[in-house]
Amino acid sequence: MFYHSDTYLLQSTRHGVFKDNQMFGKTTIFFTVGLVDKDCNEKLKKYIKLNGPKYCCIALPYSEHSPGRLIEYENILGKEFMISDTVDHFHSFFEDFGLPFTPYTEYHFNSKLQFTGKHSYA
Image (cartoon, rainbow, N blue to C red; front, side, top):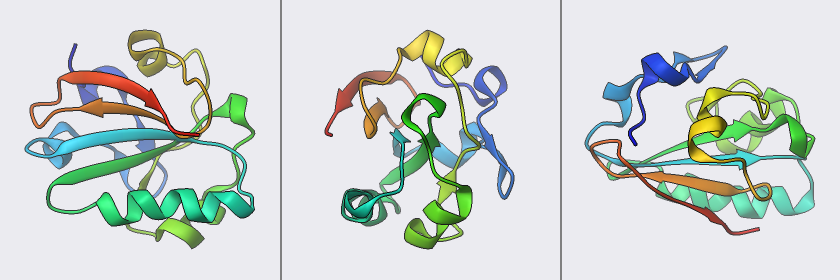
């Protein structure tokens, strides 16, 4: 299975739809986020460090994990970091790639946007 932006239409108010060409050529990691708490800051640092020329990291606030407000994530990750609008368990992304186990469930895609696996590091 492959990620196709026209199929999943993951988007943010700030960045619009996350397009394939923004991710193509990089390993892409979508990761779910939940409540913004004291542990959140430390866990999100991992994605800040990874995000760059080799990796594209995209935060998915997941409705079932009591996500914070966009501004709370932007205060930690920065305004340029790709953070989607809140998604729920009915979203086609989760229908195809599986529901998250916990906050910080990661969905990995290779440089050609082929799904390579789902992992939980909570």
